[in-house]
Image (cartoon, rainbow, N blue to C red; front, side):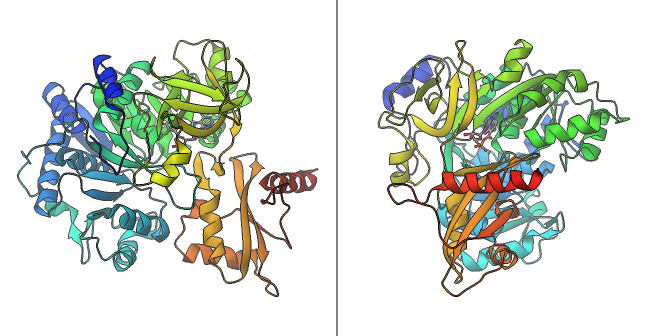
Length: 541
Ligand code: J2J
């Protein structure tokens, strides 16, 4: 099965999921080839002026697959993929799926701290980047990564390769016809939002992920006529699988890549390509609502707006239908597995006040108290889950897995929820030590560790503070080493120079003499959170 690197499902459970028809034995490589047979001339991907049909995407992916094999990359190898929203992203990912190598889905915002770690930790065989994007040189980053991770054999560059391997050269190969992976093999490693000092990687198999993609496409009523706008970063789990680009490929529809989620970029694309569905995080949904009021672009093709990644307020949710003229679908998902959707025909009250219900009748959901005892129906508690597309453990993390999963295999989501009598979930809060910055997740401990590496810092505690636009931002409390007086700006520069992604840099740094502690002597983050919240609201009034 998936081996010791990635704890899999027990044998009897595997059999149950197969017998139920959830795990069908299909792989993503075969899925694309099948669609190329059935929908060969339909447009699969639109990227600017480029329009690739299913036949073209499949053939190009097969050529890149052969090129990757020629570099010595094969079944089970890890390949860190860091590409913006460009068509080569899908070409690369399907090439890797085809040969059974595992994409590790980095985000364009990641820098040396993250990429170096992914390459090192997964012992990656290759790193795929674009030369430059948004004014940042990824080949420059690749140089630094190469220096830090000598075991990294190949850097493949879309665009000007410098001294690295030119991506285009892979396409010169004859299409690959070699053997592909099995459906119970790992398909890729996705990133966890995380709450620990080092990012955790999520191992997903073809069988389990394809089940969630197939059912998501059905729940979202995708057809070959669906046109999905990828406004969020293509590598994120939401726009990839809920139903995302993979759901659209499954349905034979068209994926339109937007270089940015901003209304002035996305709205013209919606008009030009007659986009029918897209996915946003709450702050972007608010920005779209604001811009839609006065736009001259024709958005009438859009019929479904999905919002997820962070809590969407009821007040904002209620504006979607009247102001955008579309059906809102709330999506509460996680890269570890479980995804909840409000259904397209649900009453407005359900759509605006809940975060949906699970995909599968076999998604097991438990809402428990601090002692893992089930709470009474309708009461708020910790969400635990297990099911046909929820992992049983992170990649190469046995110690963390012992805490993040119950002995009987339930994943501790770290989310605090309430379940309605109809089985819909309402997200009420979070127990994990994470900041949800408008859908972008920041693990407090990861940032604290970087701060602690500064010679001026004695101790650090990172907490969330409320924000009208993003929902939350990050505030770092810092106790300096005696006699030192670090400046917040200098600390931010220090973090940036360590190669931390910009979205993880604290929005605010407060220098304090000491931390408040809990009765057992731990730093009381609750008190810190209250302190910053009160100080912000005093400033406002
Ligand atoms: C409140 N919190 C939410 C929501 C996610 C679909 C949609 C989103 C993700 C995602 C995803 C939320 N309301 N509607 O992978 O396939 C918070 C929870 C959750 C964490 C997971 C998908 N939707 N969240 O956001 O792995 O705290 O996945 O546990 O990035 O985001 O984050 P991530």
